[in-house]
Image 1: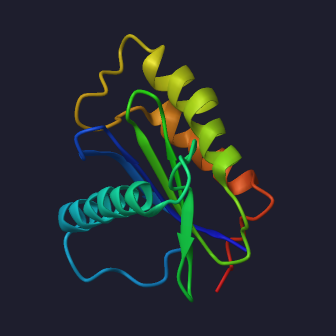
Image 2 (image 1 turned 135 degrees about the horizontal axis):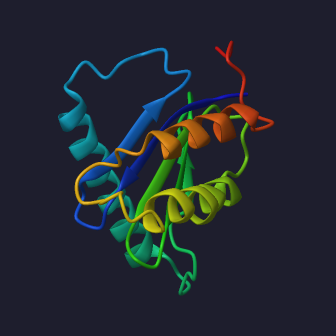
Length: 145
């Protein structure tokens, strides 16, 4: 079990934060292009799910999986989007993403008057606490395949 990477997007699609832990294959494109592709895919999937759902879904799109990884998604009321890619053995990371938002992002970014979250999150304290939190997850393994 492992975590591959984490993206944090603002409501306009700008990638505020990105980190990877156990990513074995790179996309072969620039990080900016990868961020645009990821946000565009999320926008399309959210739109598709909301239009095709037979019921009014309260939570909307939560995750999807391929044969190699699972993408977990959490959107805050303010429009921030937290995206975590894990291996298939991680069933649901919604609580993890909510924790990252409420206990790390809010505490170290929103409540920090020195941190302006306009384009990127340049808080070393946030980055180090997030890294420690991810590495302490029960499904994090540094040697995962």
